[in-house]
Image (cartoon, rainbow, N blue to C red; front, side):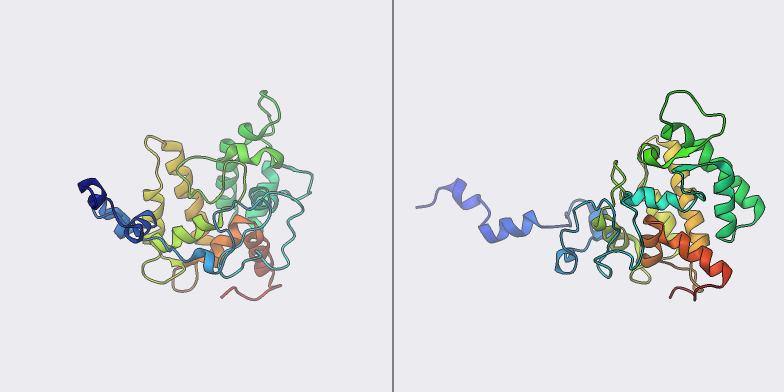
Length: 249
């Protein structure tokens, strides 16, 4: 005969459902920001951080024909601005890179100052500041800030599940696309307490990406976001400015 304690224990089937639940009744925010639970049906090991490739459920092998050069995904993201491929990004290279992406000279200069002012020292191989404000791609993971999306891990690898979860939480109007309002909501939700630098940095980074890659309806597509993480979006946008490729759909 079952004891009172045994009767109160959840049945195996109920316990399994609770263990896999993504919504808690007393935490309404978990119902508001729903996460998808079907990632493994299309993407093998979505939780596994990828060192060199940035896949999602539609592109399980990452960006077609994109060469990773044995760099981490975060390093690939930065490598577009390394104009001479020497592993070091100087301010003049960042300025030229933004100009190639279609930004005007004033905006490119401002971005150059912000990027190198914030990231240079963290990536230097020594404790001595560089008067050239250079960014060393080898150490770019050290410039990762808080209050971000968590799609890069602390070593610069890419976590596919976090990209999918971000869109399942915040893409409310159009699946796999973010409006500016949804983008703003996402950056607000990712804020860490008292991380003022991270709050500002996240807003600026996502704002620049939105201006660069939004479509005619004013949405930022998941494909554009994914390709931003591996840097292939920058290569595409530079070619688009030259008229060498057609517009991404």
